[in-house]
Structure formats: structure tokens, C-alpha cells
Amino acid sequence: MNGRVYLDWNATAPLRPEARAAMGAAMDVVGNPSSVHAEGRAARALIERARAQVAAALGAEGADVIFTSGATEAAALACGGRALACAEVEHDAVRAWCEPVLSCDAAGRVAVGEPAQSALQLANSETGVVQQLPEGLAVSDLTQAFGKLPIAFNWLGVTAGLVSAHKLGGPKGIGALVVRRGTEIASQIKGGGQEMGRRAGTENIIGIAGFGAAAEAAARDLAAGVWDEVAEIRNILESALEAGSKDVIFPGRENPASARLPNTSCILAQGWRGETQVMALDLAGFAISAGSACSSGKVRASRVLGAMGFGSDAAASAVRVSIGPGVGREQVLRFAEVWAAAHARYRARAA
Image (cartoon, rainbow, N blue to C red; front, side):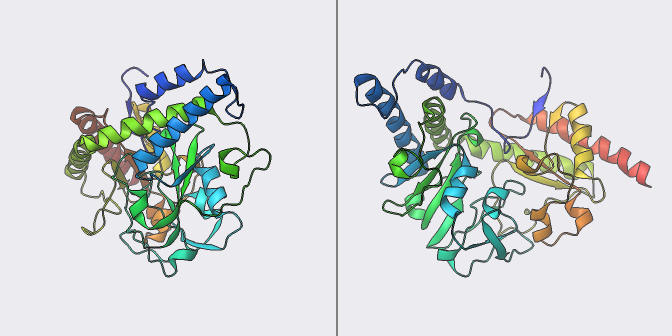
């Protein structure tokens, strides 16, 4: 990995040192958190501390934070057995449970008619487009926004939100469903009474400890303005790409009223297929993606761009660059230079 540049933070963020340390300490906690003896109480205390850390970072004090194996399981817990409407821009984990009937405009914004019967993400993983969530929304995927944007769950006006640890520098394989206190949630995994009777199974205390520490560290970074600096680097990247190619466009950016995540660029070069771009840049030492990581390896046009009105050829000609606090000006300028050179070679072959 020496000399490589990681530009796929929306797929997974590098593990934070705070999370690594918390996980190492949790490995020495012997007890089962459901046991009432001292060792069990120590394990339980570790979980409850992490629950409080995640709730505080989400602005969800007083809400219920239910630990799951990730945002995908949280989506099943929130949406399973319900008839919810959504748009095609939703992540597959939500779309799998909902009917994609909500409309999306060219800027990526979704119109919601019946919030109490709908699911709507706060931010899109491919374009970075940030939605205005309507009051009374049933479910919102907060995964990409958590840690990058200020979030106050208690003020969002949603009933349930999904989050995942590895998107903000925590470990993979742990996430949470956060719901307004008193909300009825039917357990999908039956067994014991863990997680307030909503999710059976002995808790993953190592992952939970890492999640809590990562959430707390992410909240500190956000308050310190770290992601404002990331947005400046992202803007430098896009300006350099525009200078290097007159054909590049950035879906979701063209409408000034459409806010985006501070770290995300969807880069579209008509006709130059996304998977080809990913392979070329990988060989040049840059890790990027052709869409959601959960859809990687599947050669198909982006559903998100299709919903925004792009044709199938254009929707198959996009890549995503997503950066984080560890990415600097020189790295994105080097990426832009390599991308522009590869694009010029593609155009020469296609001519």
C-alpha cells in the first residue's frame, strides 16, 4: 500500500486510533453483559458507555440506540414488515424493504408525500446530495451523514435512523438503529432479551466499544471544523478536474440549492465506463469506486444517476471519489492529473 492514495472513504473510513484502543481494552473484558456478577456488570458498563457515546454524537440523548451488526440489519429492523415508500436513490439495504415510488429531480432531491409511510436518506453515498427531511418521516438512513455533518436526531423529526460504525472510523460489522423512545420495534432476531428486547444475541462488545470511541472522536472532529477543511480539498479536486477536461460534470453539484456531503465528488465523463476508470486509477495507485461499495463488482449503470434523469450510458460512466481528513491538496491534485491523462487517452482511442 506504500504510495497509494485512498479516496474511498464513503465505502469505509480508516480505523481511528481511538477505536483501535477501545477495542483492545474491550478484549480483556471477560464477562457476558447479561450476567449479573461483577464481570458481567463490567461488560454491561462498557456497552452502556458506548451507547451513550453514540447517542451524544448523534444528538439522540433520550432516544433508544439499538446495536446491530451494521446499518443493513438496522434497516431490516426498522423497515421489515412495513409498507414504506422510498426513492431509487436509497441504498440497497433500505430499498430492499421499500417500494421505490418517490420521485427524484435532476439535482437528486426527493419529494415525499406521506412522511409517516416513507423512508428517505439524509445523504447519498454516490453523489453526496443532502436531503431536507420532512417532519414525521418514518425512517432515515443517516449512515453517510453521521460524523460528516452536524446531526441532532432529536430535532430531525424522524422516528428511526440507521447508522454504521465503519463509515466514521469505527470497526466493520457493527451499527445501530436509533429510535424515538417508546417506538415499537418488532425484533427480527429472536432469542434472549438483549438490546431492550429488540435484537437478541450476545452483544459484540469489542465492536460496540470501537463504535462508541469512534463516534466520540468523530464528534470532536466535526466540532473542530475538520470537515470544513475536507470540503476545501474536495473543491480543489473538482476545480482541477474541470481544468483538465471540458467534458467532466459532477451530478448533484449543478444546482446550487442542492447541498452535498463535504467529502464527496461524483465524477461523470460521458462514455468512459466507471469500472474502466476504477481499474485504471487503481493501477495508478488510487482507490476510488464506481458507486456504493455494496454494489461494487456489479457492472451496471447507477440507479441513483438514472433516478436523476441521466441516460443509461451516462449513468454507467461515473465514479465516486470520497475523501477524509487524511487526504491533502497534493494528493487530490495528483489524482486530477492522472485522471485527466487517462481520460485523454480514452478520448483518443474513442475518436
